[in-house]
Amino acid sequence: MTANNTTAQTDPDSEAADHVVELNGVDSGYGEVQVLDDCSLHLDAEEIVCLIGPNGAGKSTVLKTVFGMLTPWEGTVTYHGKNIGGMAPEDIVREGIGYVPQTNNVFGSLSIEENLRMGGATRKSGLESVLDDLYERFPLLDEKRAAKASTLSGGQRQVLAFARALVMEPDVLLIDEPSAGLAPNTAQDVFGHVEAVNDLDTAILMVEQNATEGLGISDRGYVLDQGTVRFGGEADSLLDNDEVSKLYLGG
Ligand SMILES: Nc1ncnc2c1ncn2[C@@H]1O[C@H](COP(=O)(O)OP(=O)(O)OP(=O)(O)O)[C@@H](O)[C@H]1O
Ligand SMILES: [Mg+2]
Image (cartoon, rainbow, N blue to C red; front, side, top):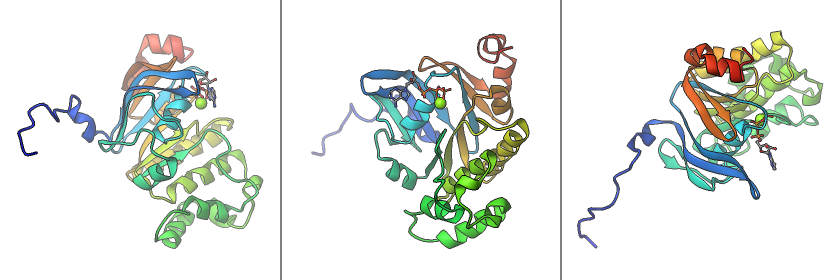
């Protein structure tokens, strides 16, 4: 058919292709249990965006839905304008999105080197040079290549989990609570690594329980509550917002 198609292809959200990652009106959950409810947010190139909100708000569920571990029931998840909702995680990794889960993010019984190689298992080429770069960037991993990951401290394990996700050279990294369970100094080091990774042109969508510190290194943030975005904006303006402060920052 060559007839003029006058009805099609006026994209109601034509800015979608400008965002690196965008959730638009997403409902998602586990089995019958709905967690995300009309959730819309986005991540642009070079940004760090911090998701905060109470326990059980659905923050981890957002990351799992972007990473294909959950399929959106409604709405769209796009990556550079391409619909990735429901794609398998291994395909999403190949598209360029990395994920550092909240817990169990390294294999304790494997060595550091084995953990990193596993992170690059689906790389077609260039694994050795990427590992060399990562060992240079993270000397503590270089020193302990042969050590089992279970022998690392919490902060070191978090660094290994990042490095593992970086083996695929993602242009987006989803990070779930990088500072969880870490002493303040160690958490600062980990946030420093998050910023350093971002400086290398990786956009970062980060969930952080430590809202003040998380927003402190972020460009923008969202407050999620009961599966819906309640507030969104520049990180500084969220930190200065009285309502956000009172309800979500304990201020
Ligand atoms: N695998 C699962 N099966 C069923 N329900 C789940 C599952 N994982 C999470 N939930 C439920 O979904 C809701 C949102 O969970 P989610 O882990 O996204 O919250 P969160 O904002 O990351 O919380 P936290 O700050 O505690 O990490 C919670 O009510 C939780 O009990
Ligand atoms: Mg969580």
